[in-house]
Length: 423
Image 1 (cartoon, rainbow, N blue to C red):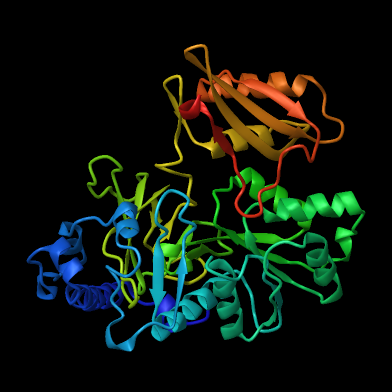
Image 2 (image 1 turned 180 degrees about the vertical axis):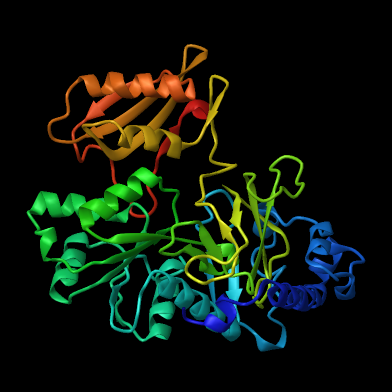
């Protein structure tokens, strides 16, 4: 552990610390008139237990976009050291201003995450997410720096160079967007690069939904152990939580973040073990504190008991989808990761795919375009179609294509192409 006195804190002491930090967060945001209007007549002293927090209103992504650039910011006299922001592809971006203390906090939680993945000062960490307004690269850099590990700050792209440096510098830890290892494997195959020359032992992956089946493939083909890291621009970047070697859920750093699971429709808090939407409140962020932010991510609380790794922080399940990523086709609701799970179980099919939705003479048509692997037989399409029908009640057209056919996005993979609205 990076901070064993906090990561293994007794649950009662943790609850007291959370309430103290909830009150401090509430006092900070109420000093901003925009927050005060949102929250009404609530006062820090009204928060006596963790359960009292659930009476506060939710904060939505739309509200953060509308607040661009600084309406809900709370840096105060300290001012801001920097900003990061989301892509803003559907309107204003979400801009997150960081105080100097926020940068320190980010490094702390990222060091915890890397330590949970077994990273030490003896490791060589090659950072493949981009450095810039996207939060990923800097977060991994700060965490590795706090641990004292050697850092190779390459950033995004230049995959053959990435592989060459991994080999030549003896890189042992790979932080990446979840599907980037697929690109590494593809370039290694196309160039004849010997993956056996690498010393990788750990991958810390996030920023996208990725199935257990994809995880197993990455671990097997790169001969490493991957860890699933949580975080988002709104919470300050990656570092919200990570799974550990016990593989019994992702630890959320509860002294910095309060996690709730709510019904996506009613907003009512759901009991432990029941899937719902993840709601996050920040307890130590200064520049952009979050009070009950609806993330749209779907998960459930797995446990609040001490983990085999010794940590006492609550564990949530791996994220299984997003309420805003749900696809509705002919009355059937499904998530892209469910299709990914089935195709990766089908022999001869590769991990690269797209779900294409079109209008068709007043109706709808769905095509799953899947890249094949060497030795794939034509019956693979039929097997996948039967699985999709049996398990998800979907009957799409399956279009098989050669490896490398689908365009590779520079960042997150594009899994759904919905042309119905424009047809």
